[in-house]
Length: 605
Image 1: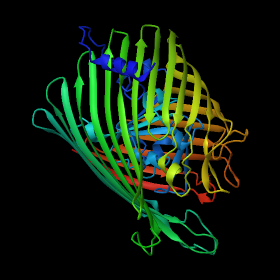
Image 2 (image 1 turned 90 degrees about the vertical axis):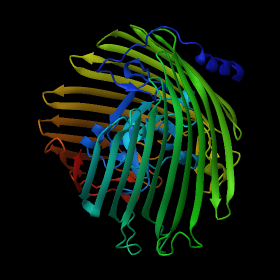
Image 3 (image 1 turned 120 degrees about the horizontal axis):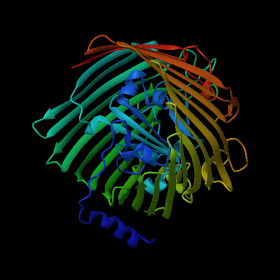
Image 4 (image 1 turned 180 degrees about the horizontal axis):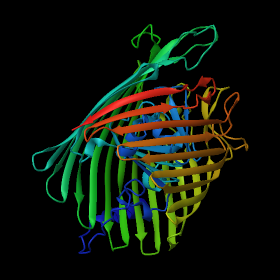
């Protein structure tokens, strides 16, 4: 299918609306928008999907997004020490930059320089997280090889409550937040969120005789304001602004030369758009601008010193996304994505930029027994050319106790601007290309929700770093990400349980196990609910895995949180991380935190 035909298909979504009535989701259905870019029940999605609500985040007293991700199936977290230090994830063995990260449906601009550092993103204004595993490039384009994580903020929430929260913890941890949602007149809604957190940290990279006594902490500030106006029952508009600033200390010592550095990030985003929501046709048009400044410098000299390094990222997105319910069981969707991104090296102000235009279309079916999807996307990038990706999936509901799903898709990851144009860059890099297949069996047996998924992803032209030449390059051959994941959820009396196990074999083109990726990951999450108290327990086991110069030992972690609902307004919370005080590392040479304690109080009115 060429671009013109695809554009016609997209335009056809604006044809006159029929008289069919859209099906209403039942009260017990979980709805998501990330899988196929329109709202649908998770039961009609071929991919494996998990949803984390704000209630879930508060229940486990998560202090960062990495606390949330550690509990999700198929995710392994790697972090250079404690809170505020660089943090990345692996999904089904896929690298952090092979997982697309969206904020309110728009890719996070940090991807223009590399994988997203999740320690930067504040959890204060997060309302919901949708996590889709498997290839989604046919809907989103570059990076969506291992999956998609959509971090949905409170910007467009219809919440009408105000909450103030304050807390303290180990390592001189402090947190303070204010979140409020209120109606403005008859048709408007205003959301505001402000947050601050910090800790003094500890020595995350101890070098005896070099940096003794150093503490590497962090400080973060964030704010968000969003307004939504309903013009009538079908048309609405919105505008929002959010910003965050983080400062973290890290060790930059080389040999016996001591270096105590700081990394500073300032990120701001403005978004606006209009939405149409009819009985059969839904259409969203939005514009999003992101800017991020990054500095690295000796703390004693400051960010204006001659030795400081800095750069700037800019990203402008324009999206038009539509879905048209053709019949009670068929939905046609599609749209256009336009993105311009720039990487600016300072102080020379040398700018590298590129533009990407994409057209996509999809057909989704959800009948009584059968459901499925077929999608196609064409990305035209002025730097690396045209990439065409597709995805097909089919599900069959044999009975309540057995649902079978199969999917096959292609995907790619374009080299980011840092890999292309920095001092370490290579302007000749080509995009990574991947194909993925997965097969899932699942169902509900006597109130036990279960699923088993086998997956196989092959990645060609993997982008790697050559330490001998100090340059990025494309590897020869194929890397393989294969595995099986099993998930079981059930209730016993007042306790909800979820157990997951991942057995994976992530290999590079030489057949060696990929760096920092374990072959075995087990997780257990439980929530016990009483009248005025709930208790949450999290456990994870991560097996042995290689690092750059050593093997990292397997480890087991427990965390526990308790929430006491004193009255309808006041909640008192406590959390203990690393309950058994395990000594472990997720990055070689960077010991993870010892047992830590947190207390918090939230007043809602």
